[in-house]
Image (tube, rainbow, N blue to C red; front, top):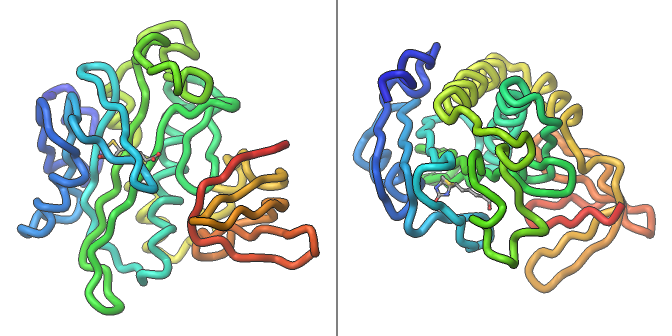
Length: 257
Ligand code: BTN
């Protein structure tokens, strides 16, 4: 991974731990952070045996082809603003992937990296907080880089894709990793410097959700409405058929059209 270190411009990823096989880079990074690992430490694995997705789902993590990476942050963010870390990661990934592959990557609320209707990556932020303070956060990023169509199980072939499938050529994993880390640092610094509006506007630019009719499944509740916007904490503002606006904290979103 020497080549990777030389591509990383800033502080995020200077402390870099590269692993062969691990259960989950997020679980490993949470343990490292618990043990005192510093802000900006990055864990990357070649393969995960229990990769975690949102809402308790598994994240398919075959060897040698994709990105499985977790970044440890010790952020000055209120727990209710933790979703903004997902916003930062999502726009950073989308921008880096667009720059390097030229693909029209968009962001589907809250954490999906999309190419048209198919998912090419996702973000899982886990936090440890004590009272009203976030002690650390782990930003987990999974990108389907060089998976082939037949690497996906039949149940995912209609909804998942990879950068290689979309461009018909192998994509450079290390360049993508470094590009993502460099972008995260830039957007994280902007956020820390008070430029929250810039961040939210960039999310809106890259979003494939805003303005669409959507359904949201949260627990037993299924809501339908128009995705109006995100608020200043990164929550989705859903306009219900009644005209009322409901703030959505989490859930499984499907775009209807
Ligand atoms: C999702 O879309 O549901 C989020 C997927 C996040 C997957 C990444 S892969 C690296 C990190 N380690 C994990 O176990 N999960 C995240």
